[in-house]
Image (cartoon, rainbow, N blue to C red; front, side, top):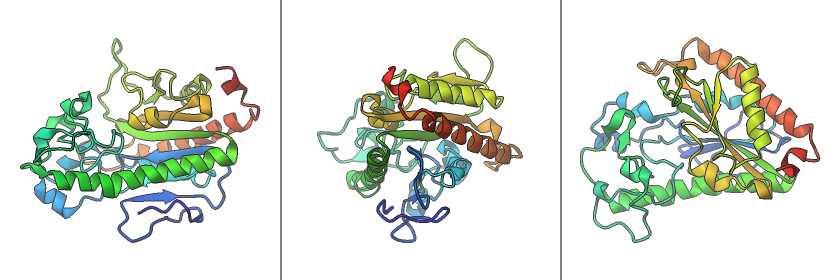
Length: 305
């Protein structure tokens, strides 16, 4: 598992064994009150899982946030930690409640505390997803309840324990913590009432998960780099943004969705020529966000909320 205790040098990977399901990349010294998280970019598919699936190796990757961990890798050099999943979203989705489970997927009875009635479960996108993008069923047959619960106990809970501890350490050190939850979205996403595709969507749960100034700054900086940016529609933020964002306590969470058409071929899943430019622009964006927070040590943007 990822070990949040041991500080490591920039570019080094923090794990306790070679096949840990996630990695926490830490700078030699954390100098910024930011934590970055990439929960859906994992691309190590267990062979046993592939054997359970009716999908081929390319189709099952449709729900990945392709290479988002790499797009944000520069944050470590800029002085902030980056937590990245190695396991795929199709196997386990940590941007859900811990027990959003579809009883139709399992042999046997789920525990009584499972949330079997959420909209995400109904849509096939619970903690153990039933579908990948384009409504393709993942599994050939049903899973055992023990299989589903073991993924939650052995991976979901340690992942969130690591994220929670990293945020808490940041909050103690700086008096505030700003979580940037990093995702990608299909190139064909459109905002209702408009024909232009957004390059980025900034989600703050309609102001509930972060100070408005942070959201406005994120939109402004990305727009200044030439991108079309919208806020909260159609993605306002998922479980992670909602769960960890407590702006009244100095805990802010923003979700950032990146249009995959900017950097990846969605048919071949290969990086395009736009990847390096986008990665450089994201480094610029992150540096500007850090400077924005750093230049207001009195946190007037928070006090004004």
